Amino acid sequence: DTAVSQTPKYLVTQMGNDKSIKCEQNLGHDTMYWYKQDSKKFLKIMFSYNNKELIINETVPNRFSPKSPDKAHLNLHINSLELGDSAVYFCASSPLARANSGNTIYFGEGSWLTVV
Amino acid sequence: AQSVTQPDIHITVSEGASLELRCNYSYGATPYLFWYVQSPGQGLQLLLKYFSGDTLVQGIKGFEAEFKRSQSSFNLRKPSVHWSDAAEYFCAVGRPHTGTASKLTFGTGTRLQVTL
Image 1: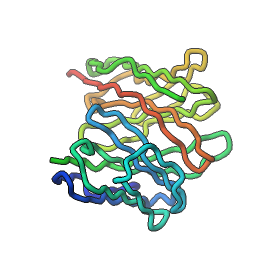
Image 2: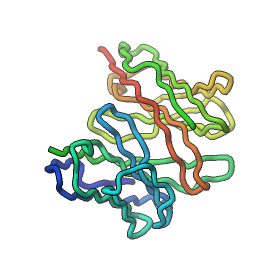
Image 3: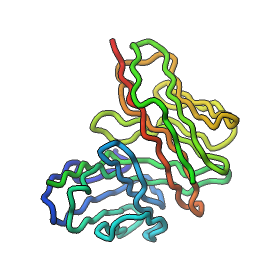
Image 4: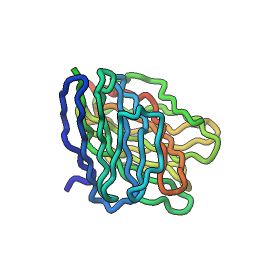
């Protein structure tokens, strides 16, 4: 069973379109994330939700809007797509940190978005 | 602000040879450190992590890493590389966010090529 699953895996769309990427985790984690990997393979956090509440919101254009209907799902909606949005978007999840330890973050397979 | 440096962009080793991938970090507090691997067209898989305790940590696929606070390093090692280890390797430092989530700051990655 896939722990963190994303759909679609590949998406090619035209500039100006609106698209969504869905993410689901079956690990029972309370926290979910979206990370973006650009063309140079640099990875950067975009958002994080804990139990459906937004807790991390990096400097991301307003065209990107995450939605968490429940703690097992975190979807990413992108409005008015631009060429620069072409990237790989990774969903991830993590359990609560224990004392003297951090959160171990588990990533999905990624969604390759190409804007033409 | 935390940062991660992976000085080697690309490394080529022969199958069966030993491997060491370098990672240096900058972080003001006790770091939580991770190594992830990304095979071509695939997602990010967690190889190992360091939170506290024994500074030599064992991971999956025969990998290990050693945390050296004095050198601000967390180098990844493998005694004998297999052709299937060819991939992109990312070092990351995690910064806790209220205990419910962590922000991972990634290095730029090291691409490992294995020759037969």
